[in-house]
Image (cartoon, rainbow, N blue to C red; front, side, top):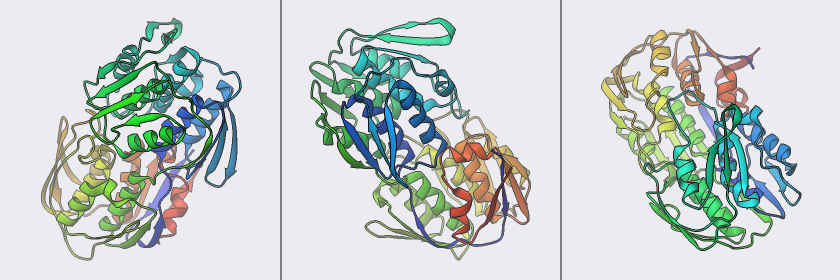
Length: 419
C-alpha cells in the first residue's frame, strides 16, 4: 500500500469527528450471521481494511452485503451459508475468529485456519476453543492447519475464561444466544465493545445480561429479528488523536466521543500536564507547557488500554524526567521502542517493561510500522519530530485508521500517503 510521510513541527488544532468503532464493528458484523433477516448497521468505518475484509468474508460465506451510505451497511444472512471460513482472510486477519461462534450456532459446524493479525505476541485461540467446547462443541484438527468444530446442538453451560479475553468473551456470547438453556461466562472481558455487542444482540431479541461486568449470563434459544443499530465511537481513534494533540502542543476538540470509555487516558494525560476538558459527547485536549514523566501499566478494561500503549510511549519521550511503562497484556508489544530510538528517543526495554528518559528531541527517520498501533504511534511521533519521517507499512495503519492522512491534514498536520 505504501508509506506515510510526515513533516513535523506543526501543533495539531481544530475539531475532529471520531469514527465508529472498528473493534465493535468486527464482532457485530460477525453476529449478523445469527439473524435470518436483514440488519442495517450505522457508524461502520467502511474505509478500514479489516472491515472490508470482514465484509468480503461474509460475502464468501453466502451473506448478502450492501452499503447503505458512507458509514452504513445492510447485511442479509437469510440464504444458505457455508461453514468454511475462507483461508485468504483467516490467515491474515485475526478478527476472522469472531465468526467461529455464530457460524457454529447457525450451522452446527465451522472450519477455520489458525488466524493471523498483528505480530504483538502469541494470541492463541485456545480460550475461544475452550469456551465454545463448554457449549458441547467438539473440536478436531483438520488438514492443512485447519480447526474443525462441530455440534449437533449447542447447550448452555458455565465457562470460566483463564484470562478476560475480549474475543473469547464475544465468541462464547454469540454462540450462547442460540444454545439451549443458560450460559454463564465467568471472568468475562468488560470492554465497551463487549457491551456494544451485547446491546446489539439484545436489540435483535437476545437475552444477554451483565455485559460490562466480569460475569455475563445469556438465556439461549431466542429468535433474533432484523433491524437497525448504530455502533459506538472508536475509543482508540479518539485516544490516538488526544495523544497527538498533547505531543504536538496542540489544541483539538473531538466530537462523537463517549468520554467514560477512556477514563484512564484522561487521567494520565492530566497527570502529565495536558489540559483535558470533558463534555457529554466531546473531549478537548490541549498542551501548551512542559509535559511531566509518569508511570503506566496496561491492563484489561477498566485498566489502561493496551492499544494506546504505543502512543503513550511516544508521548513519554517528550516528558520531563524518567517514565516507566509496563505492558501486561501482550508480551511482544514494545517493538516500536526500537523504531522510536531511530528517531532519537532515549528508551530502554526489558521484556514487557520500558524506561523512557525525556525530553529528548526527535528527528525524522525511516521507521517501520511493526503493527497497527505501533504504526500510529510512529506517525504521531513524526508529527512532533524535526524534519521528515517516513513510516513504512502504511497497510498496517490502514487496518485501523481510515483516511488517516487526510484527517490529520484537517488538523494542520503535514502527512501524505505515498506509493
